[in-house]
Image 1 (cartoon, rainbow, N blue to C red):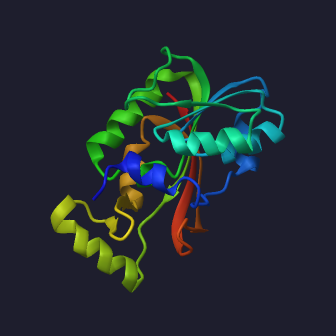
Image 2 (image 1 turned 30 degrees about the horizontal axis):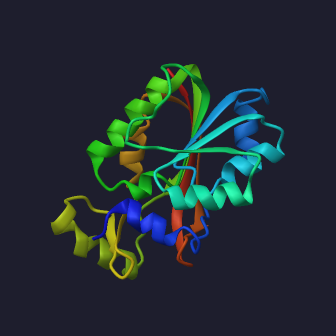
Length: 213
């Protein structure tokens, strides 16, 4: 498998990301249009652009792929999109009122790396700050079950799978794992759905909003 940064740089001009912004849920809990909002793994800025159209003005996005960010700057010059140079989030403690995490966990197959990111998000969120997550859940169709099973001996986690031709390793999540992973946040909203994927399939998915305890 190739380096994840290289995969996303290669895919930057062709992939269309698909997890939706549940604006009704977000605006219910982040009512101040001047709230400081950070989109972690912002890609080409599509979610931030929706928030901008809703009147939010203090928006920042970070991503590991410079090529995705370049696309975003072309499409959305009104946004502040910055390169995340390493896995830490380069902002002070308790800096943001809300953090977005849209189809990012699916790109992080390892539990330890996900836990590190969660710790960084907890660090930069202010007390009472909001975490908004959209991501993918396990599927039970034969295609997905076969690729989960094929990857299990290699990665040790059911739900991890390879996009062999593209050189990527991705993950769909068990709902029980999601509940445990997001337990440091007070549950505000949790809904499941079917969502299109960037490669034209359909997957189980969820939207979560939680408040930093």
